Length: 612
Image (cartoon, rainbow, N blue to C red):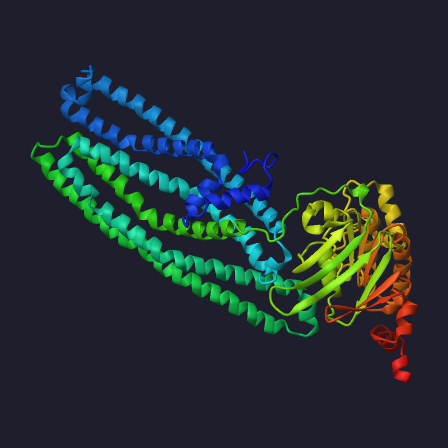
């Protein structure tokens, strides 16, 4: 059973409910509420842990009963239960011992299977839910966060919680069960001695709480260091070509070494404190065990306490107090897990800044008319990027946006895709505000070909069909032909089955760009967004890409962002942006005739300005 019913409850609604329920700062309580769908399995696993400990504590009682039989014979406890023959009593104890050991083993197997499977399920579903939620967060969320830090949450933090559920939860339950059962047995057998065995427990609990209070911030710092180190490693591996080209290998080794050493030092502080816990607890336990051993022995010698009862108490005292020495390790594991849980659930409780609109959008009914009505936009920090843009782009037309670097051209593409929301005004598709449309429908109606082509580690075929995973082989090949990619694909070692490498690093820039175009062709969207699609290729490749774009632009609204004016001279309308403002609009010939900013850019790119 999943944490949430994915079939009946949208993830965003589930997370909203989880947020309202998880205001408690206690991560364990938040996790319990989050895992509501698994409570039956948790209760079952808990029951098996308790029953296992119950039968695990039975052998000392049976040993005491055997001693009682040997010492008192016909006057033993079993004799009073109707079994006067001592031999018969021992046989009964043998049978009980066999049954107890079988049941103890059975419940040990049961709790092992239940807790471990539960840990794996929680690990899997929490990772998937967290990743799913991250995908719904707006692009602004990622501006101040590293990929490595988020990866650390999805991997290291989730695994830390899995390790606690795998063993730590059972250890805590069994310690608690031991205290309750042994305490009940002690106060039944010899209440005058029982208190001595329990004297250390308040000190142990007080020490454990103090330990938790002091160790928690240290482990939070450890988790932060892990995130920082993971982020730096991910960043360096992504930029390995840059590192090599600038011969910065040694400098980066030193940077990673510094991050790793900071992580080691932070961990060392936590280790120093956690390592001191168990030795101190052992000293306290020694006091209780010795007191019970001596005082109970005196009572047995005086005939006040039965020898069998004394044997049971000595054995159970050891069984009661010795497991407490592992509390340090268990609490250590617990605190690590709770620090990780807090980070995971805090991430899950982050509300998306861009959410689905209430209106659905039928793809086959999209005309493709785009309208900017007083559009203004600013990123989280910094000055306005776009100011008071007013423009209507008719359905089926081709409109280009040009201007100097930083004019706001690429930002427009992000706004069309609703990767960001406008700060002022509105953006409309076929007369409907983009904020009112379902995100999946809106982005399904748009195809993006970017200058920064991202190909996934997989085959050419898988990357081509990324927008339409169920496309047929024939459709994939036709899209490749339209993008003029078929020829180079056929020359690859395994053709369409060639693995392109991470980010498509085995292919040239022009090859990656053509696959990106083919991907957009296969998706067949009503609106096509081209962001500097030919900026990083040679002239021959640019000509091939231009032919492809000319073919796929027919019959659909096309928005082109370009630096090279030669690539947009045939657009139906060219819009010139300058510092976020629309300063000119018209055809290529109209703008040249105005002799304004566009004409100046044209002269620079064609060399006329140099000749002048």
